[in-house]
Length: 461
Ligand code: FAD
Ligand code: NAI
Image (cartoon, rainbow, N blue to C red):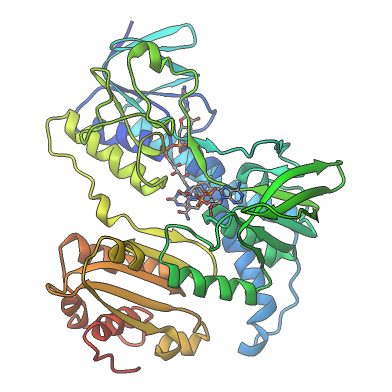
């Protein structure tokens, strides 16, 4: 039996990054992965394929809606199988990169389903691996809706939606969260009539409400239809189409809605099946997440957990940062994740991005704040590019001026947000941002002007 310093179960963004960081710190590392390729949900059926399809479909939409007014003449049409092949190339390129990194860092790979056999022992297939430390990074799975059976053809999870054979004429999305709006955008751009059914009275719960409302209006202009405060109570899948029964969130008369494809995107649940956690003494919380302390230690000695399978936002970069932190902690260093500064991005057009507290969170915790807002409509670069939908909103502590939250809906929001993240990591103020020279003409100037607006002195509004 080979003995390792660390065995990591699952090679998604949490697990593979943890393994590499631990190897960098001199540990002898094994990884166990049941999928044939590494990278987990993110690289195989999540972040990467969805962004490849978002990119391709956005360029197509641009060709249809923006080229002519820029004086570009082009006849474009969609070769959907080729677009899906483009997506697969993105997956393969990224997952192969991890094979390379594992070899480079001398990490031993075991393929198969891992389970905790005993303290310091992981079973995979017929083999038992001994390891001083075990990190569980088994991620999450799509949440299912009671009474609605996902066949991944007509009624799909995000996985099926990333691999449809044809563009559906009518797509109903259940859940106005990140997956629903990103994948809904892909198909809306390719020609589907997209209707989103959401249980709550708003889209994107958790995001700043003003941003969510503005974003909903933008999506409606793009052709999205929303049915908020509504719940799907049953689905009839006759192989040719799906008929949904939909009623108000509080009940009432049911309405029938027909679609060619239904995407169920109502959240994700931690994946812990078959790991032998109960016998190993690893406790779960009421939502099925592995309980960890601030050092990522579970309730069983020598066993740690990170990523989607533990508390916190289910995001790839959060999983990665936890992977680095736990490897450093195991090496005797001070690994740490600042959960107050984890950006979130919705990769639609325009993008939505946020870091820190929303206005609703500040109000409910009684924190006195000032808000500065700047519209892209008044930003020179956005005007030149004719991408003027949206705004930047900065929330700063009323007394200290420290930036507490930044919310953007607008062009390149997912890139712009990192300026705010770095500032907040260093405890910066709105004044610091307002006095930092920003190149002209850039979209980033909208952040500077929103910071000026915190003290009522934006130049262009
Ligand atoms: P995972 O990536 O889920 O990896 C877990 C791995 O463990 C898997 O490879 C699994 O096969 C393996 N595994 C499970 N059990 C065992 C076992 N017993 N033995 C061996 N192996 C096992 N996040 C973002 O930040 N940005 C995005 O743009 C984004 N887009 C997304 C789009 C979609 C459609 C989806 C579904 C998710 C998206 N996410 C995005 C979320 C992101 O994918 C997850 O937060 C991230 O993958 C979590 O990483 P993880 O390492 O915790 O788990
Ligand atoms: P989500 O939690 O973002 O949104 C789910 C939505 O479904 C919510 O609006 C919720 O109110 C609604 N809902 C729940 N039950 C419902 C019901 N019965 N009927 C109607 N609506 C219902 O979850 P989603 O979109 O499935 O994504 C899962 C996770 O994956 C996200 O939370 C995020 O962490 C991650 N992700 C991140 C991305 C990114 O960072 N760009 C992209 C895609 C996924």
